[in-house]
Length: 389
Image (cartoon, rainbow, N blue to C red; front, side):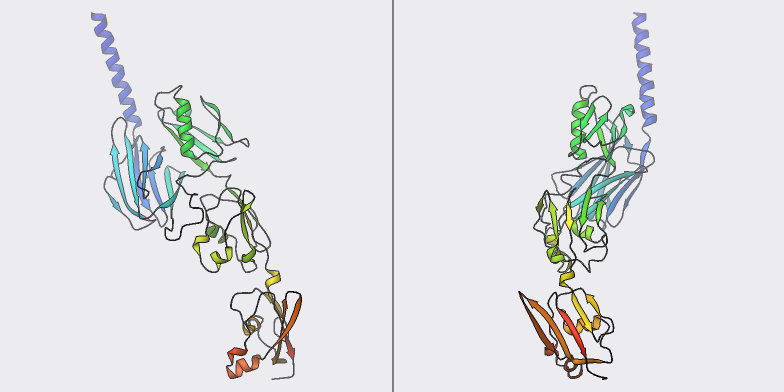
């Protein structure tokens, strides 16, 4: 009997010590919740793991941080930035401490998490519901797709010895403790989390896995053509639309947007870059996917050539609505020897070439704008000399 009581006391003391050790480890706390123009950042005083999910409400994101205390951030935060309406922090105490943060969005949005220096930053991009992108199926509802050369941080709650940071090999595999080689290319972090948890149930009871893409190296886009100054392979670090990519390529002045295209899986997408860039038609703005190819040819054959008695004979990019006088002014204007009423437009129409005379002196002196001929792509302007004016 005395021996049984002694064993009970030892078990009780050991249990108390173990609980005390856990409490000492549970000292990770949120130190900041910040909303920027297009992002939400959650900071803590120590490294942490997190999960992000969407509820049945498409305008709601749920962020959970296991073994993290909510700290002083226990009241609702009203926001007018990053498409966020309000942030509702709460604390779940049982069975383990979990900081739960519900983010209410104004519109259905794309969100991309990035973890660095004890902080998770969630980039939020609203989708235009009135003018949806052509491929609205490509969104963060599916999440970022893991690819070759990406680097993953895999954490298992309560088992720090299983936490690893591994690169994705060229064969699309990683090696993880206990489970060995796992095919990850083509999966989202959430899908990989579920897959690893299923595998780990063979060794751990109710495992909780966190998967974070710490380095995105596989989201490669290929830009070819002489219509842009920046071409070649571009590695994207976040979900990116076609328009956002074009803004990174520099001037599109020499781009033939009418004949540009987006190629995916060997097929051209029904995207009109001219409508997107020139007309501002955002229904043409698609979300890019890894290995998309953007073809942007030079608009040389569509440029306006201005030669003869002008100050700067040159080739000028055609723009819609351009007139003969517009082109001559872009070439520096007439010289003092120019015959302003002896201007010829050389225009090719099919297999024929036409010479069209334009009297620009009448336009400039008499205001007769009907004589200022509208140009077409590929026109050539010849300004003849005729004495001093």
